[in-house]
Length: 545
Image (cartoon, one colour):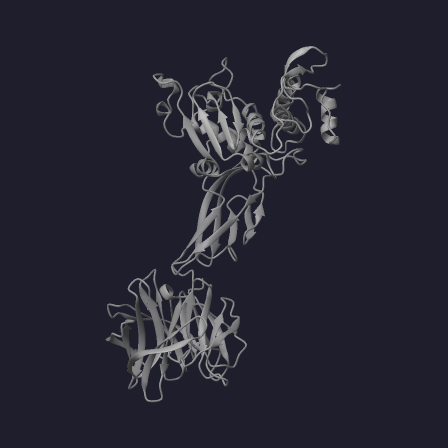
């Protein structure tokens, strides 16, 4: 793992190198691509870049940036030879740096992101070769060497400078603070030029950790932005369900102790069933079964469990994870409406929480959520013949912002982005003869599609008329046209698409969808026709043969 970054040299007298340090022992270096002397190193979380100073640049001192990959860029000229360390302070988005004067006195400066430099006050007599900032106490700390011995100092922006305790002989290699450990790291150089990494605590403890190599003196050292951080898996959710063949997006970030999170670049993904899944933010398909998905970078890692089912019917019959429930609840505003007063069976208080019990005849908020979540997973081999969204779920979401669920049986309706659902939607079964058997999800999903249509622009609404059933004169028809049509057209098209093109719907569900579609044919005022050749073929197969 990369625990620290440093500026050093491969060998005495060579150009500066970008060095990564693993505190368990590994040190790696690469050329920065410059002969400039570089002093100090600090990290700015808002830009996700490191900063250093080229104090001896021929045309004048420069503020420079370094990426984690070691790419050096000039930021701006600075107005002083800042050769004693640099530290970033977040509250004012400024750097603070030290200039070691020819008179032997070290002076404290403020440096803006644009390079503007202001001298604030003197620090001490001696040479400063390490500066760090601790946000928790709003205090700077410095290593000051005088008469071949290095002391540890604290510095307040008020100008109060305090000598704390001795750090050792000739500490000339930078200083940084680890927030997760609340201790400092610094580099000390031996007489032969070989550098060693040490830690220092505010209680005075100073510990030799490891050898680094030659010539880290007068350079800089800084913590890795993810040192002490953690991996945050954004997708998949813990316990999330998928259908075999469904695309699964893997996305994570590294939560830094020093500021904003890092993205998924460089994160490796693995499944305990399927092995290596890729790096970064890949999209994968997982084999059926239970997986432990692990995201890792350096020594940081995090795992989540996911479940992959053979088809959508299997997924629907498995309890959703709390995170899945929360996601659907976040996509819509739900209003849980009580029924008639005085009847406890029509009060939501009688059915608390989100229990998953598909054999229960009682109303359940979970039933509503699970039906919508099944719609979220559904995909087709051909694009849906209506709407503008990529999926049926997104089409509903595009035009619906509020879902009102009543424990009365007043019927379903929608308009203006509000969908009103009755008690039937709260039950796992809408078959009174089998109140403890979960009804296939399509018995509810096609009604979501139907009602959502009434909130779309251009919805023609329903018109009472004589229905077409293959013979004239049958009443109760409601839609004057099939294509583009109103709610019943959308419901019919949705069911027809499941029957013919359902990707994750098993054969039994597709057969049921065909039967349900046929029950809607008496809702149209005219012989169903369509300009879409796929729809036209299905109409001929289902109704017009």
